[in-house]
Image (tube, rainbow, N blue to C red; front, side):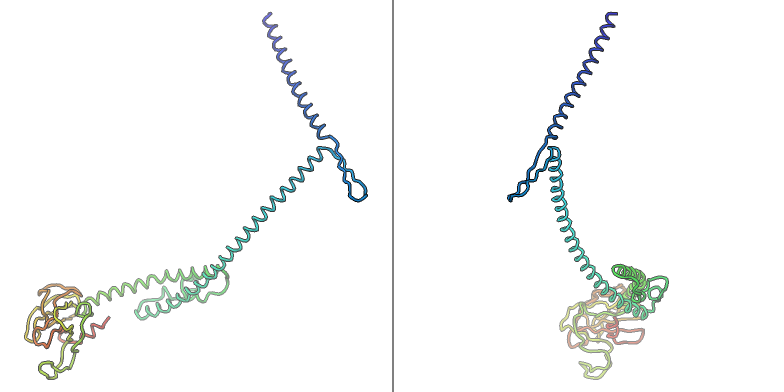
Length: 337
């Protein structure tokens, strides 16, 4: 029982101390705010005395109002400087943006000029491509036919109505030009395939100069000539090509096969090659031979060297082209390309 009473006493004592402490704290806080209020409530008189004998102005206020006025004034001045600095920064940024806009407009004008040049070049390309396709007999319907529904034809590009302006017009032109060039890829590739097949054809017919690196000159042409030894008129059945010396390489003028490697009093050492399409070539007056009968040779392959064997007045190559039983002027084939 005594222990219970003691516990209640301790609890009442602790509660009383706590309440006393809280009351004391609030009392001190109240006194503090009261002192502050008294300080700010102190009366002040501001006197304005003019130099002339005029009326003296008295302005009564208190510390709180004066402090608040100073704070407001400082805030106004600070805001003025802050927004003034921001205004200066905004002015500088606007100036920079104007300069960038000027440069952008200059670049845009240059781009428009280049676009116009590109379109004119494309127009010339279209004309040349159309002529080339016509000459080669290639269908042009996919690339040059005018279409009302699709803007793939370049002619519609140059007839575009001025329904747009500025960058949009240039963008439309570039898109139409791109579409045309895409459609022109197929015929250009077809031309490439045709040229490739033509290149193969030129390898199968005697279409190059028979002396390596294109050296030498024609000392006697094809046809009626005065024989240099017999001094009589006769039909010269080939070309005499001279380099003024022996030993220069002689090349096959087309792909073919060696059918004869021989010697005669007239031609000296000679080689006969058989080519496609019933064409034969003869290389005579050689000083040496680099192939044998039955060998397969390719165009530009060295088959021998220039000499003066047989009936000659000096070192040279006698070159002939035969089609079946007919002898033709080799120059017509050399200049075929």
